[in-house]
Image (cartoon, rainbow, N blue to C red; front, side, top):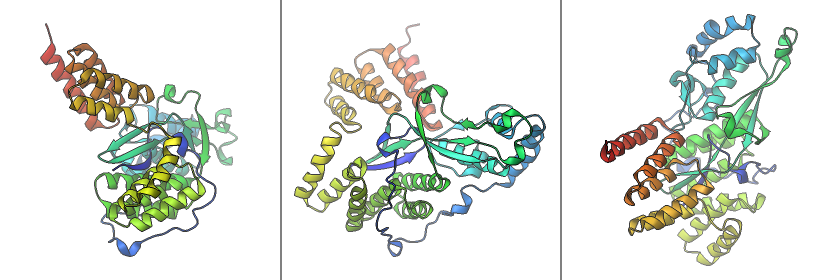
Amino acid sequence: MKTWITLFFTILLTACASQPSQKISRLQLNDQGFTPSAKTVNIDEVMTLSNEMRSYLKNDISPQLRIKSPQRALFDALSTKGQIKLEYDAEITRNAAQAFSARSGNCLSLVLMTATFAKELGMDVQYQNVLVDESWSRNNDIYFAAGHVNIVLGYKSAFKGFTQEYSQAMVIDFLPPKDLKGQRSELIKEATVIAMYFNNRAAESLAQQQVNDAYWFARAALMSDPDFTAAYNTLGVIYRQHGDLELAENVFKQILGKDAENIMALSNLVEVLRKTERRAEAKVYLSRLENLQPYPPFHFFNKGLAAMERGDYAEAKTLFKREIRRDANYDEFHLWLALAHLRLGETSDAVDELTLAKANSTTRKAQNLYASKLEKIKATYSHN
């Protein structure tokens, strides 16, 4: 069983970049079907300046405003190791205060933190979806299409008279410039960014099998931005996981009523229809899905895993390489290609692929795992 959800933290799925302008006709909530969340679900806390942030702003950033534009002062504070040393970590989506406290987060967390500082400094803040190549990840049977956002800092009238630099907008992005070269962007509302945050928290809760908490996060996403289609998809997945199959079906069909080519809604609807033994109807939607996406994400990778299972390591290597040609940025693909190389006695190639896996991993936990595997391989296969 496959589940498809959109997350916004690394790279944007092109098909999900432009949300339909019309709202879904009916938001079908089921509050009575879920118990209150054990976690805080509060829109006001997403971009609240903590005491720690306020102190940093007063003592470290504000003194620089005498010689720098507010954009430059904030940028330097975020990018200079002597001030804040930020680390990219996609394991969990943190709110602004949590990202600052941890000094780490995914791009959405770091955007929320930056925006919170910028607004306190009196700057204009705009948010952008960055339209880059599609990328997928998965956790058990849940497949995630990842998205990317960045932030544009402008000026308010109080700053205009000081220097030329004050009148220039500055884009702050937490991906390397090479990953963004030539990419298009679209402006999005702050309400959408907050909806993205809650949608991420919902998806992360689902990955941990915390379906009840996921519902309240998805609900908060839709309360923040009722136009945010990705959160409807997540809500539909939550209903399916919770056993509310009729509600799930209705949500996915409403999405398709506004966007007939929505890949994730189609895939999720097919699974719901199969689960309710309506295979003829499922086949109709599956045919539409296969026309739009003949080779879904992980298609060649899953075939490669099957080849590994039967001991056909050469075939597995070919299939893993084919998946990597579609998406060279997912660490698990490189990990399994490394294992295929090892089985074939190609130690040097295995080390190269594990190095790429480590470079493309987005969490500290994964980086430490790959580093450990690399050390073990080098120690085991060293010819000294």
